[in-house]
Length: 319
Image 1 (spheres, rainbow, N blue to C red):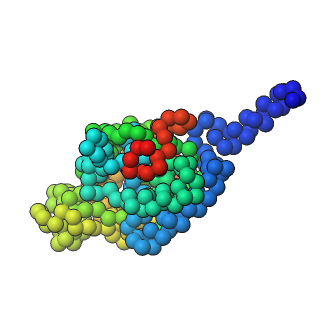
Image 2: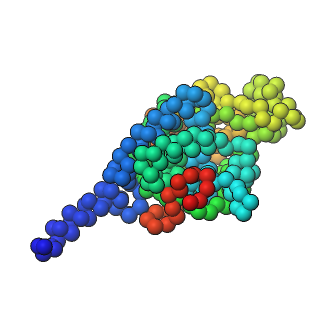
Image 3: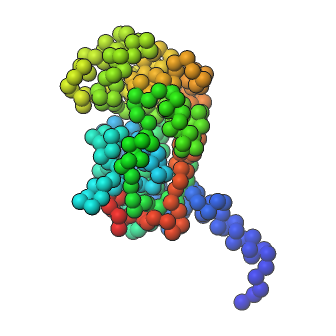
């Protein structure tokens, strides 16, 4: 064997950087050798799921968000409760609210057939979130991969770390800041509410109590489907104009006091973030670009890498 020189070392470093990332963590090329078909499998399954039920695109995006805000992007939200384990699914922000688990199961089954034990559930959530946005008309981004799955979950952190729909602007800023996300990230990522639906329980207080910050006719139209009591699971579009298309009309609605959730309208209510809302309302491309950057940053919250955690065979339970 020949001598090992500086050129050999440089080549090894370049190859390592290509597949594992300069920081040894996440990189878009993580599965390029171990499961080259991973991205196309997820994309196809997400597309099929959205064609079957458009709402599931927003549900998959929300799963990634609710996962990352609790101990980082580690797939913990996917773990089922058992006799000896309490997970995050029954936490207040998730219980009877987060959905899309069956789609994740289906994607995982396909990936296990193609590349057994390779693609993590946490990475599936990250890829599916991106593909959902793209399929519904948003801008793409390169998903950084290489997350591993947690063997634990935290119901208590899920109850405190995920911003509630009743949050005011200071609470939202605090929640996002705790995750290392900026004011710009907060506003851009809130734009995910340009798609999807919310339950009556999430916006009831707003449509009856927020008289100064809600358009009166908008409130009345919602009250017909969401009475002061009962019908808790009745749904309303988060974006009343284009609820199945990923665009900036969410921000245009805020300018007209037609944000569905209290936490939505809090972004445009005479505070320091008003200018960002106005910018995204007036420039769809600026919003889509900022959203993509925000998703990359959010997806990098405290990932498990290397020998940390595991790659779950079944996303609902530890191996």
